[in-house]
Image (cartoon, rainbow, N blue to C red):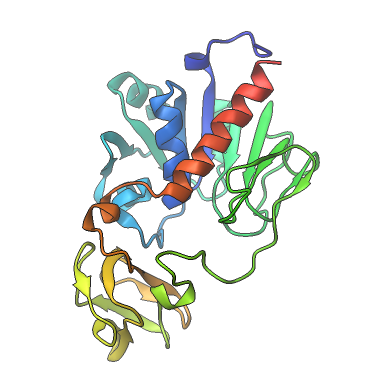
Length: 271
């Protein structure tokens, strides 16, 4: 192994703690890596039941048996590892955490579709998820995040497929399955994650303006109550397949991306 460390000794810093970042973190945790995650102060995750960033609001979040907890200082990271949870810090640029940890691996999992400051010299191995990163320039390795034949593929040269602006197909639907706001205001939900909804029903309101379901199914994701949103913000996700258990488990997309990250780490350090 290039670093001279065992897998369990490699320190991984993940920027972001939303749905895809959490799928990656869960897979690496289960593979006995030592992890820390960073987030913004007000995450806007929709698939909250499978996103560790909920710990920013609740203090802790458990996803499929793995627990993350919010800490207030990098000095608390090692204590969190000893207690068996993934530490999460509010550190939007990850600078404080990165300088303190000096990680072996840095993963930019913000999914912003552009690079928000990650550099290839931030760690011995830097991995970027999705578009916005060029392998060999911004990151050592890029992971494909677009649904389809290449989902989870490790890219050693070049970049991921560009963002199409069209959500991936689930149950035969793409953009119709997402709930978006039509105006700026405060979000108030009328439903909960896991609830069944029918096409045409009011799922939530922004101030007094309704957010209406375009398809029938179950609410796989829903923004937190009372969050201020902009016009066009994604505030919900309907799964037309109607399986409630899917609302509380990691998606096939997040698992595939997590598998791609694991492959990239083993490829890099087992040379």
